[in-house]
Image (cartoon, rainbow, N blue to C red):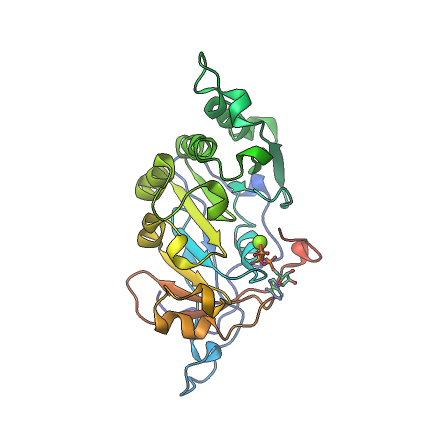
Length: 287
Ligand SMILES: Nc1ncnc2c1ncn2[C@@H]1O[C@H](COP(=O)(O)OP(=O)(O)OP(=O)(O)O)[C@@H](O)[C@H]1O
Ligand SMILES: [Mg+2]
């Protein structure tokens, strides 16, 4: 964070995403999310409040890891959908069966149990590999919404295969809209999710994880490796395991406002973040 973006006009228009053909991607080139808040900096207030924080104005790189924690209606899905709009290479895990995104194709996955057999134990993994394969040459989009079968919500093995396929795909941002719906817990994490978190950077794989669950439920490796920890409005009873200083501001945020607090790894002071809903997502139903 340089802070030099303060008060400047956004680096790109959030409501005018570039089409897939205009942005290059693929191994060796990672897309990045440029983010500058629209708000002008206010004079630093004495009392610590959301508006007294410096506005967040970093460039989030494609291979960065973002952990977003906010209660129901805390605008998580809207924020990620907005910031990843210009990203041409995306895999979004949609356990709620309701996510739609501009320029994205939806893939409904069959049940893991029905796909894996004794003779073909990696059948599901291979199926996901095909489902998320690059389709540049075919004039199709590389933004994919994956909808696991209803019986695989929480399915540990199914999600391990999905994470494996994403790891192998490279040059992609993986958006997990609700980490607890993947079967990962603070005690037990899929090996391939660990792989993405630990080695994703060198594979140009970014990881955006959202949750409305208490902090302590989130896999430790995701908390440890997060480049950005973003809090939206949080209920105090859900937040007992979050540091007092981090939570006191998040508790004051109104829901459905698009206001967030961003902690950057290695820095003490948080930033405030507000991203307006872009025109292309106006009236959009976030899951
Ligand atoms: N930037 C914004 N400005 C104003 N209102 C917003 C903004 N972002 C989201 N909202 C409002 O907040 C509502 C909830 O947002 P969203 O569905 O993204 O939250 P969520 O955290 O994903 O919720 P859930 O936990 O249910 O998945 C939206 O329907 C929208 O009305
Ligand atoms: Mg949501």
